Amino acid sequence: MQQETLSKITTKELISNQKYDSSKDIRKPESTVQKSRSIFYVDMYDLDVTGHPAKWKIYYAKLMVVFAVLSQVFLLLQVIEIFQTKTASGVSIPAYFVYELSNLLWGYYATKILLYVNYPILLSCIVSFVLAGIIIAGAFIYQ
Image 1 (cartoon, rainbow, N blue to C red):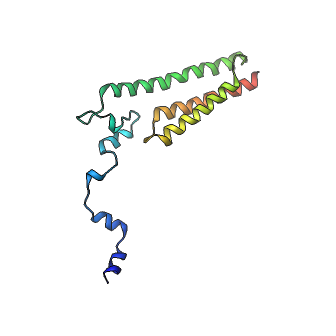
Image 2: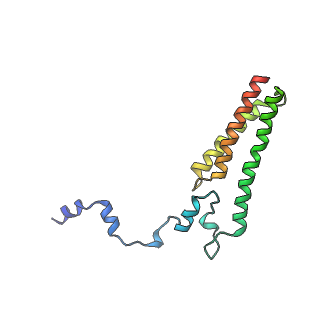
Image 3: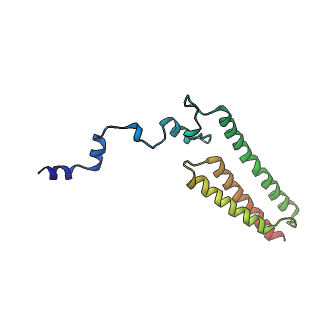
C-alpha cells in the first residue's frame, strides 16, 4: 500500500519537499547569474573576497567591447575601397575564406563552449563574417 502511494508522488513533489542544501548547489550564485545577462560578464571565479568583480576586469571588459567595434572599421574600410575603386587586386581570397572559418569557430566558441554567451565576441564575429563575405564577393566581381 505504501509503494502505491510513493509511486503516485511526482518528481516535482519530491524535489519541492526536499530541503535546499547550498553546499551541494553547483549553480552560479544569483548575483553572478544577473551579471551574465550583461555584455560585461565577469565569471564567479573572478570575484574578490567581497563578492564583487575586480575593477580592472570590468574596465578590461569595456575596453574589449570598444576593440570589438573598432576592429570592424578596418574591414569596412576595405569594403569601401573595393567598391569605390572597383578593383580588388590586393585582396587574397583564400585568406578571407580562412578568416571566415575563423569567425565561425569564434562564434561557436562564444555561444556553445563558454559557460555564458559572450556578446562582444559574438557580435564581432557576426559583423566580421558579413563584412568579409562582402569583401570576398567584391574580390570575385572585380578580379
